[in-house]
Length: 86
Image (cartoon, rainbow, N blue to C red; front, side):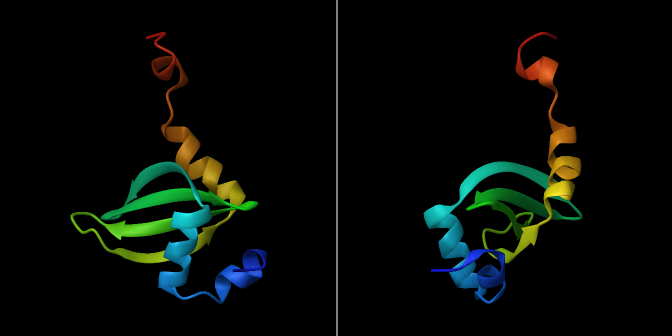
């Protein structure tokens, strides 16, 4: 369906959503400015699906730079709590 990141940029919103549903692996969700942002791993990169709070429709889907993925998602994980050490 696509050839990496360049092919992703040429897809419509519906095509991007179908790609996430068929080949994406859900990773995490974060909140940002009235949105739920869902992170997916697709092939060898990350994508974010942006959904307004209280709505079911995805507003847009964009590539997520790998360096920002760590900053935006990993800081929310409390390892001690996840392992039951607290």
